[in-house]
Image 1 (cartoon, rainbow over the protein chains, first blue to last red):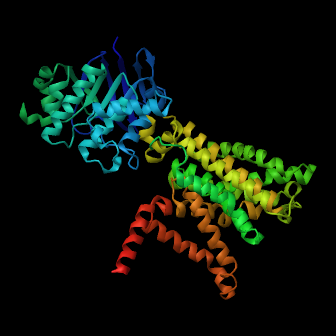
Image 2: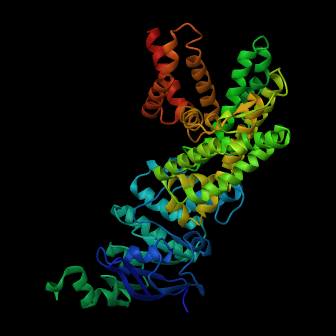
Image 3: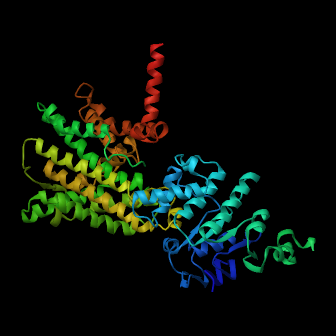
Length: 240
Length: 326
């Protein structure tokens, strides 16, 4: 029994089935990659896990608790942190205040929250811009701020939604190092959605591939990369 | 938000100035009356600022809580001859209850819809309190012979309430609640993902905000000795002026509403008296027009208000004085 299990999770938007009977399990301490072409339902799965949308049918179990119908903030307090593909910094607050607001999830005092925030900022290499307004950060900083905010809520499972998109090669290496350290140093389980194959192949233990809301395969990065259905989904049937 | 000493030197000087101000104007009950109104608007503006400026829930109907506070002081007096002074406490509490109940409805809405919902709730109360004559005396209003002729006690009571309201917001804003209010203002969806129960914290903000608005309303009745529903639930004279106090002073700043209150009370008085009788009478009808221009100016050039954009104003003034010298 893993830390998070999805059982036949389905989501309909009107007549459109965005996610169709997707099931997978994430083991504790694992990094699971979630891949699929644009519009295949990756972000929707994240939005279902932390209940931005209610699921149409199926169950989501986190640490033995059925969270299918729990509210977003309750799920965060149970220990699921997430980042957003379209970053959501608290723009008019400083970077440190952004992370402090997150840290108050587990801390009750100003000093306690600030201590946690400073640790997290150092971990995500944001300590040098701590007093900048979050709205003024460049994109790489904003992506890392997303991670910092999620980490400050002290999650045991982290959902990373395209945290490497839009980064240049050196920023990309830094992001990969941070993601690896989140697992090795903090012991946090990770599900990562990513289009950049360099990132996903490099850090995932296992990959779950979907297309049109349906699972097409699951396995090690090497297996998935060679799978003809995955190649077809990404490149079209001409490449068989 | 740095964890400095609770009051800075400047703030202490400001508070001391507030303490001596009525004695400076001992010769003029008229000026003392203006000071009392300034302090009342500090309470009301600070109340609005917590909900709108810090929590991002822009209320267009703060007259609802002000009016409920006023009527909570006035109605027991009208029917049972109970002293309206109790209203300073019960008015706040009743406003909290009404605020919470209205919140259940209006917090389902976001952004402009929330603003319209709050506007509607204040208007509903204004009409209801005007029509239910058996309860409220309708448009004839409720009259009370005020306790003192001298203005000093009123001033110090409302001054203490003003400091109390500012203090309560200042305290809240350096705690978890404050950070959560700001998170909700900046991005409600992101706030939820951080484990913030946005509904609960919006309610907390509403409760504190409506309490102070209710207290201000109760004070208004005690001091003025007369209310009717068109006065205390007024859209233009209460709800809108409350917003102006907040915007001109500085949305989401601790001292913004205080500065806004000074500016707005003096401006209103300037127009009401047609610039102290120096201008022709039609000038006093221009107030709404000038307030409108003022809001446009502030939103375009000082979006942070006088307090929020103080650095900008200082810079501008500094450059001007330099160019004049050279």
